[in-house]
Length: 493
Image 1: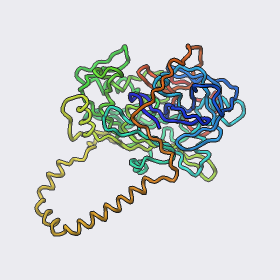
Image 2 (image 1 turned 90 degrees about the horizontal axis):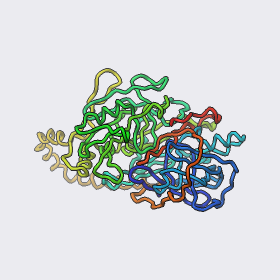
Image 3 (image 1 turned 120 degrees about the horizontal axis):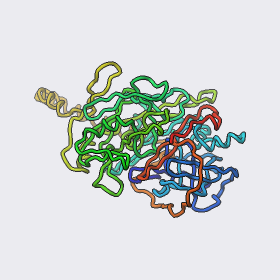
Image 4 (image 1 turned 60 degrees about the vertical axis):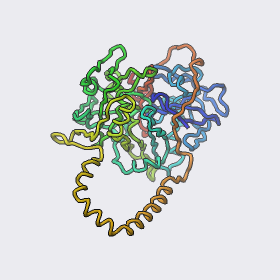
């Protein structure tokens, strides 16, 4: 089980040495670490190698150890992890006992350190899960719940299978990573972003990136999204009463101002819930801020243009495929599939139910076409227009329906029975337990009192993870290749 805390971090359970720990889920890092309440950790073997993992705010220090681990119902007999003895990390104050990196293997610091000893036992937990089960699909899939939209829908996380209600994600287009082969992070190309009725072109400062595209990093360990200054201005600058507050590095926006926006990725449209575009600040429901923050040059470090966090990822069901093994045991190229979860009209109603005012209807977006000009794309089913057209032919239709009433009733009954059977089959799984729900309640563990004073620590590769204190956590590269420690991506802090 798991939870989300104030829509800032997302937590699930991992079992190490027979003990279950709540850990933050992070597609932007690759290492597993836990801060146990008692030491030594039972059923674990220490490597006697000390290591620190440093984040933008916070760090974790301890010894690399090995133990049997279980995650999402799948077990690994010997898993390397950091058995932390000292840490300062805001995630600990939100109920997490550590971080579970879901990224590529080649950014793992633990793996790099173990590689230097000549061993290959430092692989990430996901790598080992896939390696030990080569016939299984090598993907993770999850949705991130929101505590603000009031729909009561739980988030979910799974390995090698999809949530039955979102099973059609596998029918969506496969979004290639960028670069396509051996990427260093979960980065894809953004076509454009849409605010209201205005489609906005994008560009990239990443060397070699295609023109009229932006390289964006998808990171579940980041609460908000970091984007170029002009992007943030395009989102919030036209809102009456909105102002940029340099003291907090965010736009402050009137809470009743609805901002309808969407991202276009691989010619697919992904609307973002307006409650996630201007969230309330933790502990103060009367103040709303922009969840898209101006990106500084040092954050992207020339490796990506945007860092997309949970405020966007909550609006999609995402499948991250690391590439399946071929007959030779090699992995294919990774890719991402995403299913839009937000209906713009329903989201508008939810926004105004929470903030007051009148919902919008028939929300449409002008989306950039690959060629010249723009194309208007409707993201809602225009029920009213359809009914109006059908009403012209209503008398004739009623006559036909009356003549075939008995046949229609029989067909409906048969169809209902078949549908029920099909739904039952779709929800059956060969390996129960790989599906991990993330309910609306959250743990009450608070470890701030366990944190020692800060000390000198060396920075390692990092990515952004945000709490109200700006938690910062590592982006990630691919399982492919055996890059040496010195060749790994440098810090983006």
